[in-house]
Amino acid sequence: MDVMDQFIVMQCLGPSFDGFSYLPAEETRGGILIAWNTSALWVDNLVHNANFILGLVHTREGQPWWISVVYGPQSDELKTQFLEDLRARRLLCQGPWMILGDFNMILRANEKSNTNLNRSMMRKFKTFVDNNELKELHMHGTRFTWSNERDQAVLMKIDRVLVSGDWDLNFPEVLLQALSSNISDNAPLHLSTSAP
Image (cartoon, rainbow, N blue to C red):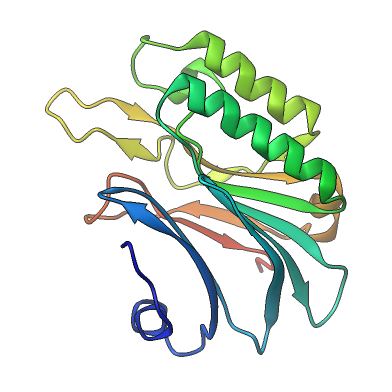
């Protein structure tokens, strides 16, 4: 969607989601929505980039933490700039950090169903993860999160959740699940920070 308002957010997510920020979609690509229930938490210090929204999450208890919701670009040149923009923003936003969304990149060869791999971009993505000391949360439910939906389908894991060590220590009971969808070529991800 290229325009979001409070009514659309509440219609899609429910009336308890009374805070939100978004990046508009360009045709069928891009678009990011981050929404929250202000009785449970709130997000401020919001920064919008062409490929991510960053904000500081405050809960009723515990220390605030940074969240970056991403939609990675398509071209290699823009992917390299996207990783650099995230790195630069991270230098300004210290403390626990979660970065999640559609990176449009893979980290490992087994995250794609064929051998047509861009190893140079994989190395850049891995370097970004390593240099920022990020950990990938284990995802339950499926191995791949995207399909080109053709007869000879190409499948990839381009959606993920990365966290800093201090974020991981603050939320030891997380559960990340990939859900099914018949309205998107990406699998929606569900993350619970207090799994039973």
